[in-house]
Length: 577
Image 1: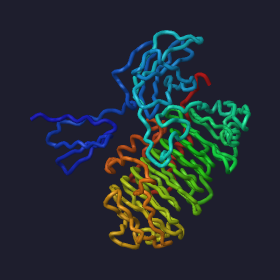
Image 2: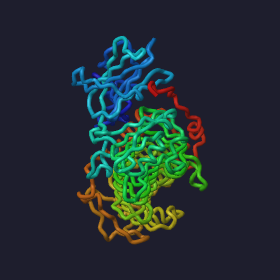
Image 3: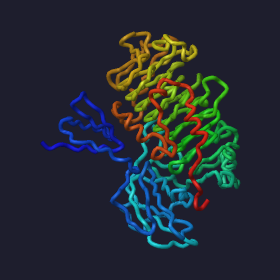
Image 4: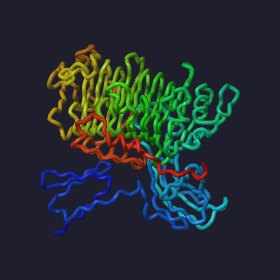
């Protein structure tokens, strides 16, 4: 009998069904079942660059060592060419003629100990050719090398894009908006980068240094989209002088104005805010993507006072510096949204052992406050995934990986639709203050009134002995969640919180209040999220937790903290810095 050889790539997951069958969970959601008796062998392939087209390369004088596509971007790496003092990199759609090649910005070409790398940003989803040629004394020399890459589209599901287009400096197709200003910020250029900023209705001011540029933008007269591209490891000095000594501050100074259409993004796999976070006040259409945030003071990313249509995605969030309170050993909140934060999406981020992942709302929001959390990797973090006050929040397709305290918490009349998430070794996946599991504990939410969680199609595995998940079917008044049998089922108004007597908003079944989305089957959420969350290709900082030790621990991981404190960029320089 002929048998099968199974080849499993990095984006597939292998599971056993009893002792007779194997299932292969593909990244696209497909599941292939095999009879064990029919399998001859299993081969695991190494991880290749994202969407690499191995057969599509033209070899010239530049020796290409690595290349691939990512979300609305691509990259190529090569060995230094003898006699070259610079390089030019060109990009075009694969279907276009050769005269369509456009040269990328020189700051996107950087030197590392292992060679040279260029990243191409702002690509519409599709196939592209990148051409690399060596330069000496300003003149191109030798024959170019050409590689083929495929750029994928970002997932724009969520409230940031609900009835709204073009969050940040980019169009929804991934290209920069018309008249967008691009600022390149490195450790060397952060105090010298310059821009003429409109600071009145009819005049501009020449500003030098990113902090001075942000100060000038606070006046609210600049209408051009702004794309701030961070390169390499950048420290706080020179980044936090625009009005907040702890953070890069994006703010409109007047309550009657807003700062609009700003993207803050990392270039490549190693862009790092080191020793500071990002804070926004009265920002509309703001995007933060592809960044690592390490050793921040206060919050990693914070939103206060009338922020609207905000998209935070594909970032790596690490420890902050210790605060004065006992629960701030890992820093304060990783991402906090409060004071009328509206229409926000937190998606595809990787949180490394966050102490308090996200506070979502305060006590006096006036709304409408609709927030989405999807496809995030809560990697051994402790609590607040998120902690919701007052707001209406959709939480779907997240991977809760060894969360030590609790998953979702709802208080102060908040409503949460918790759908198709993957909970691995989480004792308290969902809590409402003062009732159900929380009422049996130590008062997790300090006596606040309760909120209601609607739960549907969530996946629980490796349940600890202390696992507690109480539905309305078990106790009609004292429950953690109202568990529904279909996504479109509404919760009757007669179901109210024990503390406060509030009912569920049912925002998720109102077509005027919910966006179009396609949830991933929860059993494969782990595979999908771990392959897409965080920075490009997983970033340049990797850490594997020990589940036997870290799953139930909420103390600071000293080895991880030491690794973060010791982190140093491998970037040598940009060629045209």
